[in-house]
Image (cartoon, rainbow, N blue to C red):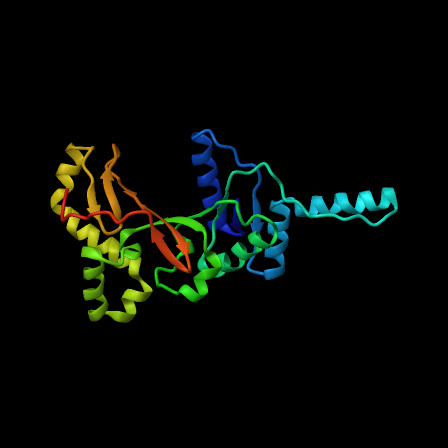
Length: 231
């Protein structure tokens, strides 16, 4: 896990470790990073055991007293990296992972990695990162895109800055007529713009998000889901 210093990073890392453990997974290593570029580099090096590889080289040189040809190796006991980061930090961390020989290791992130506004030039540095997010910010065609364009024409600046909040408000309004059905039929999903919504046994709404991956700086979906107007 690569997580930022501070309370948000602590909460995210704890939640991920708990959920991953319940699925039978194990967190091999966790490393905190700050917004300082040099400290980010150090955090990635430590996470991937690059420093240990370099220390072994120095030890061998001192023991054999000769120059050695050596290729730095990262740790080999990881299946993927969970990266908790906002766009600005992710655009620095992802290139560092590539530089330190982890380009082929899958990287997963939360929706925080995407600003919600397309910026291919800046987000090209995050290529290959897989994340989850709501249809409202990921779908560029169909009913969701048309509705977003209508709201964009009415309130361009607020919508760009608070896009996800608009989506939550829209779903809250549209769900009201279906609350009884969602409560009595737990298998029913409401196809919202924030995700596919279900009501759990505690009468709380849970979201099922879409998976996307950055390619050429743009989030790409495996498939485009069909959204209806109600359950």
